[in-house]
Length: 110
Length: 118
Image 1 (cartoon, rainbow over the protein chains, first blue to last red):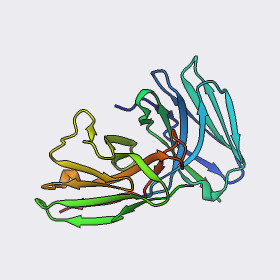
Image 2: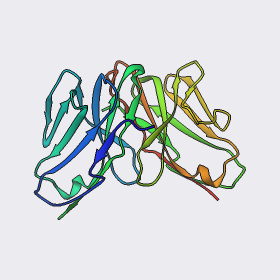
Image 3: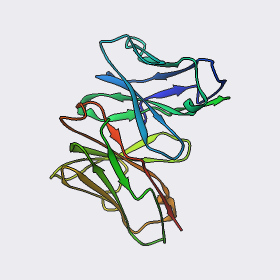
């Protein structure tokens, strides 16, 4: 079963706007990771945030983690058409297995 | 980043035949490989975890006799879908972790294999 629930399931924005998506999970984690998947392709690792971190930045990406609420958010600033993809959160708990959320499909319109 | 190569990218097979999918780590030793299945517009579902030189650990509900996993070396794991049925049609993705590169908690993914059983 999937631990993570993501919302929204789909997001459509104009180029230049920010895109925010959220992920909730149910059990304790060691870290939480965000991945990107272009249609019909594999996953690309974007960013990892550890359970003792609250916020992390990487380029135009900003990730927050609230372990008390068991939730995380991914913000993509100044979006580009090339950011069109599905984004998945994945939690890493005991056993080092990744459990993926349902994903958010992002469409950035030029 | 580390490179994981998955082959083939697409395969069409007839019902009842077997299909083998390969997952290779090209620039690191993959002590652990994971196999996922993904249905259209859905998330990845972990099928099994394989450690080099030992039997794979399958997730609940995954038939180990149907989805044979072999991880005979530190750079290669294979998934064989035996006696394929149309309902086995799906997108299969592998990922790998290992010593050295990449870091232990970061997984690198293959490009996926689109299996269509006709």
